[in-house]
Image (tube, rainbow, N blue to C red; front, top):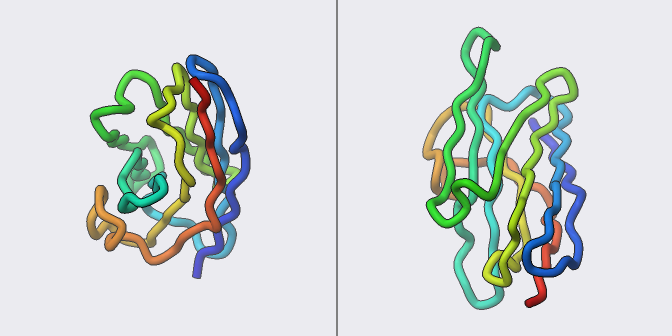
Length: 126
């Protein structure tokens, strides 16, 4: 099993930056991702990172609206994934969830992940 603990959310102004962290314990996930859910909306994909089979690198995927503003990265030694969010916009306001799985099922869909964090609130004021 995998346990996930997120941190780093908060209240910022438009144009500011935040970095979210998600520490995994238990087994080492193959894929880790960030999703977000705004009030009254479905949970949506933000970014994912998949480690190489031989641990030599990784592949990243982004939702179109965050490309160029958000960066997902992973520290394999710490079993932690980060989401650096720059140029934040009010539409980025949501609860951000870390997700992970031991296998690659569906990178951009919540159904592809069996393990979830508790969520961290990000609020961007205009």
